[in-house]
Length: 66
Image (cartoon, rainbow, N blue to C red):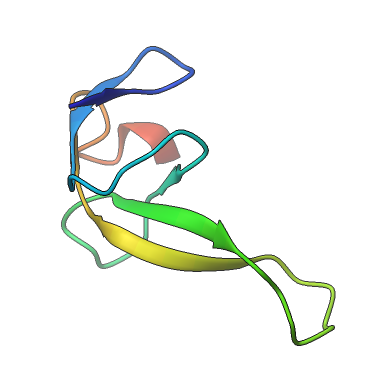
């Protein structure tokens, strides 16, 4: 169980921790929990590691994208 800074409540992988982010990926049935990871490539882009899928009340049917 987790809550977001925006007040959403959700269920996700046991590995979820503070600082993880939620993202909605087109074509994915569920939002994903992602974690910022070190960027050793030097390309100046943010890199993320997928922690897993989650259920977030209020985010399951594209509400975030609207």
